[in-house]
Image 1 (cartoon, rainbow, N blue to C red):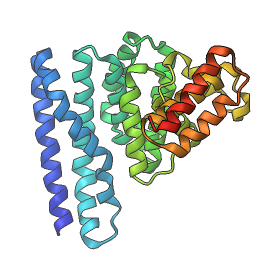
Image 2: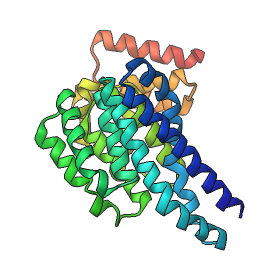
Image 3: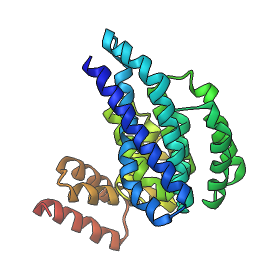
Image 4: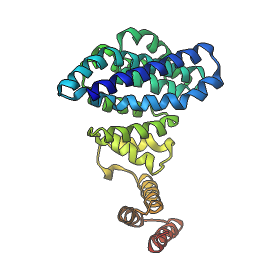
Length: 278
């Protein structure tokens, strides 16, 4: 009974947010839209986890599931569509693409397919993404196909496709959703884990594509420059966060490279920081 009431109340909350999004989007007031984005994102984040209520096999869980799937999912789908429009109207085109993909992967809806697809292609063009790439992503996120795939699997598919976009402004949100997926006890593919690692240690975005390509092979396939940058940045990151075991590992790898004199100085400095716990 408690679960049923919780789900009904959550549906009412989504509906309230959806109504307000439609209101501010209709006014086309950019300042008003931007002011609402923070609260809207809190709702968006919660929708990533709400499916937990749907896998409960108890009688109350089944009753809640019937309500949620028919009403709450529809509201959530329209909510993400309107949130995507908010980003589009404020010219945050990468986040518009990110949000339209959230709608398609988390709450696919055939009714919204045409309009979301059109705005997604336009947002892609403004973000510097070629039309054929945008259309490829739309085919991969076809609602008729995704509705047959479990929600937990769609989370991973979503991460993969956003990484594929390779848009630096999305790194922060994408990293957050990688963490969300881990919290959902969903197994993260190695490809996604390594992207998250490179982003966490602050490898320059301009170099990310080159690093991600090697993940099709072994670590040894990295060239000398790539290893040098990655080991140094990883060592600094773990030193900063007082993760001594990990910092030792990457300091050792960095200093084990055939370094030039200026890089040897960096090696000595990293070792000194480690020794002094700086």
